[in-house]
Length: 111
Image (cartoon, rainbow, N blue to C red; front, side):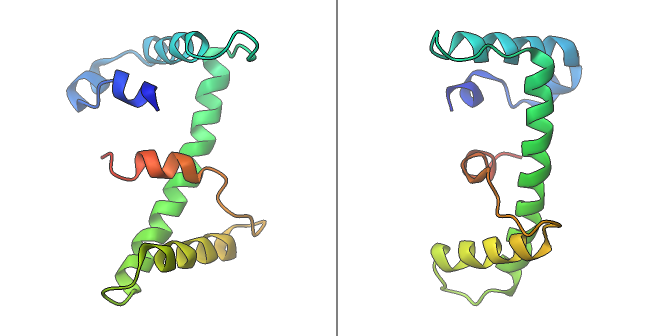
């Protein structure tokens, strides 16, 4: 995720930035960093996709927090994640699993 490292995580910068400017930067970065054969995306479509990812990952983080609080000390991360996946699927309206686990791995340690 080269993009994460190229965008500031400083809340002072983020709070002062115009949303249109931010999504234009995301749009430019996305389209410049993909192969020519890849479909070009508009800023609005990237923003919409992000809102879906953000929603699902936030739900997963909530379930992860619950499972961590209930798990015994010393259990492995594989066991913990399996419990989180089970809870996520159980609570999902369509009983689906998280399709954005790759995003969770990137976002889990970012405030």
